[in-house]
Length: 250
Length: 333
Ligand SMILES: Nc1ncnc2c1ncn2[C@@H]1O[C@H](COP(=O)(O)OP(=O)(O)OP(=O)(O)O)[C@@H](O)[C@H]1O
Ligand SMILES: [Mg+2]
Image (cartoon, rainbow over all chains, first blue to last red; front, side, top):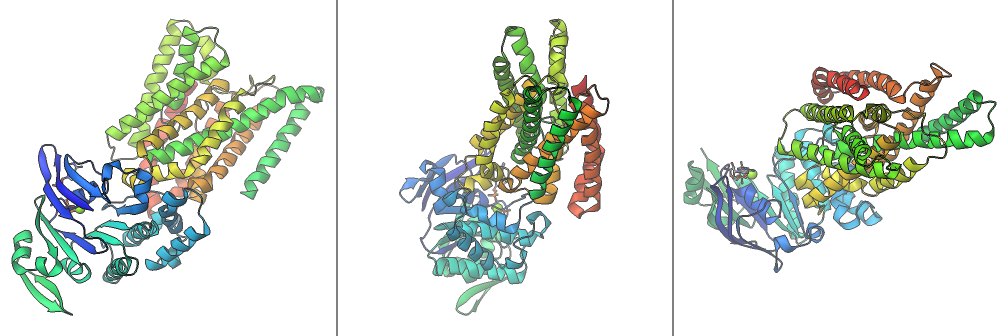
């Protein structure tokens, strides 16, 4: 997937300013940056949820807007930042909707197996028959992620998936992302605020500031004291653990 | 589910029995011409109105939207008035066409409006719907008065089954295919009910399904209004009660909703016919009374169970019970 000169304005204010980058296939890419930097907007545009004002989004040789919606939903799945689903559905019923692009309403035995697997990935087995409107915020978030996993697409876009999750489940989430990439060959694009998760679990990082790309590169290239303190306007220290750069900020 | 079928079966037998008893001198032939169409009309009304309500609630993401609180019924009545005005000799099909168009248009305008103005409070949506419905109802009444049509229109304002006799199966023809259509697209409605981004992600065209679904709901409602008249409450109560026990997955609840709706109207109709026998009360009256009792029961149930339900119930007790009673009056005038 290749993005060229992407621009988006809201009420005359440019929130994404000619952003260009290429998403490396079969890798984990994390988008980081301060609140309002335009990360979610970029995610929305490249997943055809938000209309752009200018620029190109090339997905597998064809512009994203020219893809048939149903075909695209088998290739690319997105979890948006805010999901207030008010419906009385069980976790399993929700996850089953991830299979909709493939089998419509009729869940096949193969679908059931994939649903089971997604539920197990997110450790939701015990609560799969509970109603999502009676779960905690983090549990609901995990159910939503399970649905996206059940959609079984080559491209998986997750906007702040670790939102609401405790340290155990957030770490588990990141390990799953790694597995989706390493074992199943998927391309995963994440928005993360926990820079150290981004550093530890992703291959590439794209740092946004004020609607522009401040830095795009491998983890090592982006995780420098200078870049990070410039983006976040906070003092940073970079350390190395298991050969990976981790940051301390204060 | 089995219970529903069973109670439906009981209901049918009961009606047959009461039909036979009340007309024990009549012959089987008359029973067939008069009771059977009536029974079918009752079942279709119950099924149709509750399914229409279910679809509207899902698509609008609001438990308090229904054909009554979404201006659908009053729009259909407006359509009938237009048909009576412009084509005084129109057949039932002609009037149905007008009612369809008006109901669809009215519902679309309402939904467009509530999507434009993102209401913070869920109770605001049905309030606006009731207001909108009353405005349309007012125009209808004014026009009817101006053109001396009040008498002719009155039979569509208060629903009753006493006119449904002599082999009038129109409602069945109209409502059954639409309900089947609703069942086919149940999953689509569910997904659209979870929001724009959610449905885009799954490759479901949001606007298309939204408008198609609303049109189906509006057409079901309009066909009931054309044949039977206005029957409120069912579209609000039935889906809510069923969702309380069965959840919100339409594929799973549609059948239950339809059956419960049918049983509900059947019971109401039996009461309507027995209370002041040999005369008959308009079904609308009985549905209104039983509906409001159930509604209050629903409120108390929600108050007692769960944090979320409390908030919902509380908001609703203050803001919603009164307007619905008002809508009832509005429809009955
Ligand atoms: N629908 C909208 N209408 C108007 N402005 C918007 C809209 N959506 C986003 N914006 C603005 O666009 C800018 C970028 O928003 P975006 O959601 O992309 O930020 P973000 O990087 O995802 O931030 P966060 O880390 O808080 O999620 C913000 O200034 C926001 O106010
Ligand atoms: Mg964001």
